[in-house]
Amino acid sequence: MTKTVEPWERLMTSRDLFADLCDLYEPEFYISFASRFDRDPHPVSLVKGVHETAKAYLEAKWRKRAAKSQLLKHSGVHLMAAGLAARRLTYALSQISKSDRASTIIFLRYEQQTSERPLAQRLARFGPEARLQALSETSAALEAAIASFITLPDDPADEKDRKPWALEFAEDFNAKPPRKKFTKNHPMECAARAFQPMWQEFSSKRFARGPYKHDPPGYDSPAADALYEIIKRLDASLAPTLAGTAIENVRAQSE
Image (cartoon, rainbow, N blue to C red; front, side, top):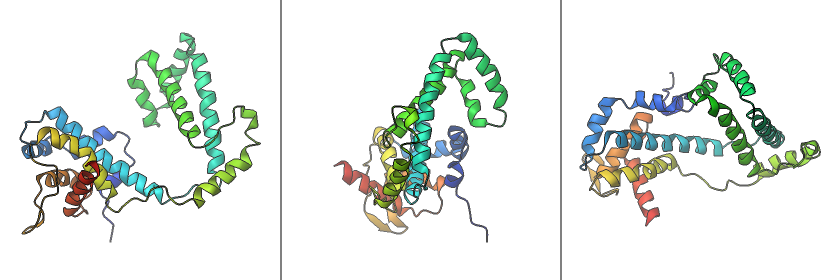
């Protein structure tokens, strides 16, 4: 039997998450969903809140899955090399940007190379003079991200000398227990935390789990029902009661 692929699994590799979420939560969804609020939410705010809730669920699923994996033997070496390469790229781009002529030459040809690289095509959304800056800021952010947990040598010439240390870094990292163990309901709790501001702004009803009812089984909670309506579009395999449990945990943490 072929396993059912839930929407959240497909969205993990989305090339345009906003557009894909718009397809998942179509206008008809919002017409029904808006009735759950009694303070007349603005349509834009409603879309933003639903998207933020969905993205929080996706991010948590991704982080939870990543927490179960380990660094490969040469991951430390590759991380260090990537950090240094990002540093060099940032510097080179800053020098290129001093010449409008050089910037123009790059992007006339850059656009010709993106037909099979849809993610690279997104750079065309920026204004002409901002495109090189976007690449420069991306590389600078990449260097800073890597440097936040692995030491990069000040001199690239020292990279070879640091290789044994980088190999040891991966071994030590894998030997350490996870800093934080994610609960089974972690993705739903993250979604509940993202959903909470929208609910509290547009609903006069409490953001709480509510009492348990047996017919039909579940929690008597308008907030949990609304949260589940969002998440079931992403993952139909989840039980509705998990939304109430997640809301109670988030509420308890905020008190």
